[in-house]
Length: 413
Image (cartoon, rainbow, N blue to C red):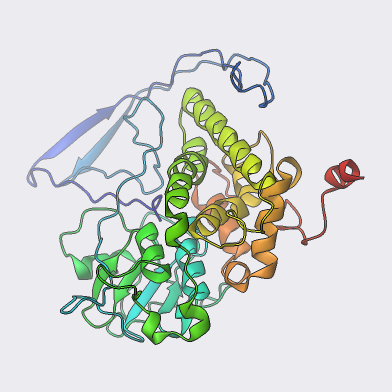
C-alpha cells in the first residue's frame, strides 16, 4: 500500500551527541477560497471564513547516535510547505513470464500474495486473483489492519481478527517474522524504500517478485507474453477462467485513458485530499476529486450496453475504480473530508454500478472487508483522528442492490 511508508534512521557520527532545535510555525491565517470556480458550477459553494492564526512555541530535542526518523504516519513531509501528499514509486518490478529461461515462470503453489484488506491497492490484486481462478494456484495472507510505527505487522497466533486468512506469516522459514518489513529485508538486506502491500512473493527463491499493484493486476489478469497469444497462467486454468480477459485488446486505449485521470484524481485524489496539511492543498484536491466523480457519473449514465464501466465487458477499470468507491461513504467522506457529496445520495449511476459489482460478482464482495477498512483508516491515522474513534455510520456499509436512501427514493417517485 503506497501510504504505508517507513523511513529508516539516518546514521550520524556515532561518537557525537548533538542537539537539534526544531521550530514549529503554523501558517498564518488566510481566507479559505470557495470550493467551486466559475468553470465548475456543479459544485456547491461553501461560505468563506477566516481560520484562526496561532504560533507554536519552539521546542528542543536531543538525539544519540542517530537522527529521529519521520514517523510512518507522517503522510506529508513535515518540511514540505505545499502541504501536498506525494505518493512514492514501488521498488520491486519483476514479472512472471512463460518465456524460456524466465526467472519467475508460472507454477502452481509457487507464489504468495501478502495483502491488507484495508488497502485499496492490495484489494485490486485480490479481486483479480479470484476473478481469474488463481485462488487455486496462488496463496495469500492478510496483515493486521492496524498500521503503526513498525509498519504492517502480522497477527500473532492468539489474535482473532475478522476476515479470511488473517494469519501469522505462513511462509516456511518465516516463523520468527512479525512484520512485513522482514520480508523486504529478506529480499534486499539494504532495502531503504517503503514497506508496502501488496507483495507478490516467490516461495521458491524467497524473493519479492513485485510490489506494484497495477503490475500485479496485469500479471494475474491479462498481460500476454511478448510473442504469443498465451497468458501467464492460462495453461493452468480451466476453460471458464482462461477466457476472462480484464485488459482486452479492443478496449486498451479506452482503459489506459480512464486509468490516467481516475488514478490521479480519484484513486489518489482521496489521499491527496485527506492527507493535505494546508487548506489550499485540501481544497484544490477535493475540488478536482469531485469534478472527476462528476465525469465518471456522466460516463456511467450514458452507458446503456451493460452494467460495467465499458458496457458488457468487465475490465481493469471496474476493479481499480471499485476499490476506491466502495470505501468512499464508509471512510473517505468523513475521515478524508471528501464530503461535497456522498456516493449513495449524490451519484446514482456510480452507486448502481458499484452495487452491481459487489452483489453480483463474488470476487468483489468476498474480498471487501469493511471492518478492516474502517478500523485501519480511523485508528491508524492518528494525525487525522487523534482519539482513534471509529464512526458508526453510514449504516449499512453498502445498500442492497434495489434499495435507496430515503431522499433518493423520494426523488425517484
